[in-house]
Image 1 (spheres, one colour):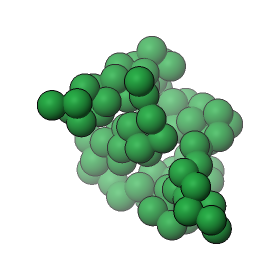
Image 2 (cartoon, rainbow, N blue to C red; image 1 turned 180 degrees about the vertical axis):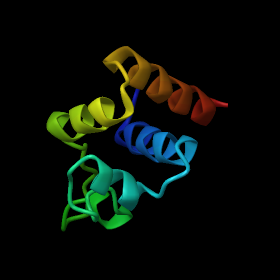
Image 3 (cartoon, rainbow, N blue to C red; image 1 turned 60 degrees about the vertical axis):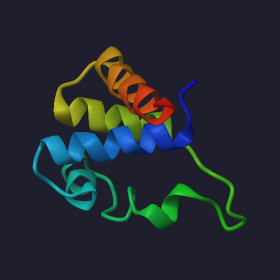
Image 4 (cartoon, rainbow, N blue to C red; image 1 turned 90 degrees about the horizontal axis):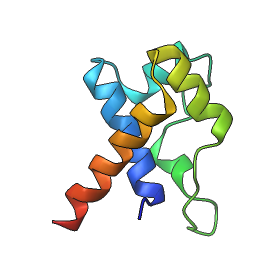
Length: 83
């Protein structure tokens, strides 16, 4: 099962593969620089949050990736944690 952490880790991996910080990738996607900050990954009560589909779509468009490409990265993140 893919978790919130798998999705956030996939976003971090995409940034790393493109030699940019998550903050720089957010800016490149037309998002606020703090969009991918660790502090934004949970709400005020500590409950995990998912990035919005709009945010994911902006990343995919900026990186010229398909949703299936993104899903494969999420799957990879999930399988790595199962080991």
